[in-house]
Length: 388
Length: 88
Image (cartoon, rainbow over all chains, first blue to last red; front, side):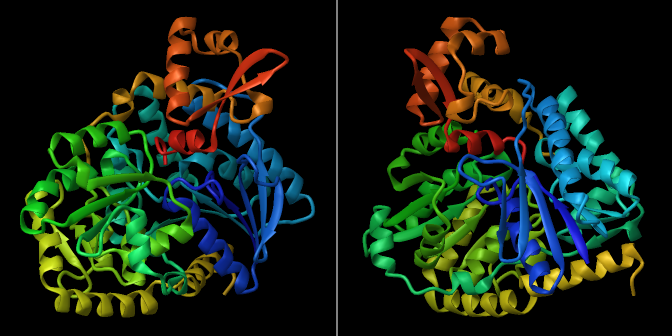
């Protein structure tokens, strides 16, 4: 099949899990013999066109700006459409796959122009991300509804997201299919000198490295982890916390860390390269995912694949990825006491932690490979295209 | 599930400017803008723009670019990514 895929994020334009998802899915589909074309936005240093592992990547520059984000997003869709028009002349696509609202206008246009089906993956909703609090926010919510209405089929990455989109956008249950996220588990099965990795982040051999990876935004619940720092330190005096990621909420989080009186235990790294992230995951004593809203939670899978025990909030997609006290440990969201309990539970029981890691690795390898997820996505494409 | 916070209203002022610079396209040296141009685009006072640009430069989100004796500003890749976290 010839597949056109639209996403505003694609490496090296990486913000959250979306870029990694589209990269993994496109590569998985291409490796199964499909002709995959990804349309995305430009990024300094990235070429306007390239082929990566058989995936054709087209990057569009937004040549007209506007201070308002929403207006800008609608403008860049025009330039993505233009890029698609150039590519569509030689390549007639069988199906378009849009990821999130940001590229939905271009996808919907092409659906009608080409009379080909459109599949939409809703990775998260405006309603869930931020509540609907401003005119722009309501418009984004409206675009999300419109995209789900126009799509021939909607994909979500977890059962909790299926309930959310069906409830909020009043979608028929059968229109929405759950296909989970995936990772390349082999990438995380690496041998690293964990003591030198830890030393780079100021963690001495006798200390414990508690890692948190995610965008520094409220929905990731990082402030609750920071409020748990003194509670963890009370039972583990050598606890050090490394927070990997960037986001507009960073200043506030740094203030929260400072206000606990234990800010010296916390290190904000900003973004780190993928190779360094893998090394950190493989070197940590525990990975905490304290989200308050999490459609899927790919970082939990990454931790499970890297062999670090995962302590996660019992919310959203995380409840489907982790089995409590078998492949990870659940804690209550927005609850520093519970987070501190979860972290201490893992740190105080190293044999149990090793057992959790072993179980988690098996689950990741069996259920969350890109090969399996690409096959399920291709089956859904065949359904909407009418190929059996 | 509603989170109960209005995050875009809670942005620091200089981050609003960073977001606007991104949206109007000041993301490379070739597309960098002078303080005067930024003032016109954003409808902010020049003194406010200068002060916020200084903070953004210190944070590594904005870079100064000098061409022919004219000072212009554009986002760094870290600055671009910072803006994108808002809507992703």
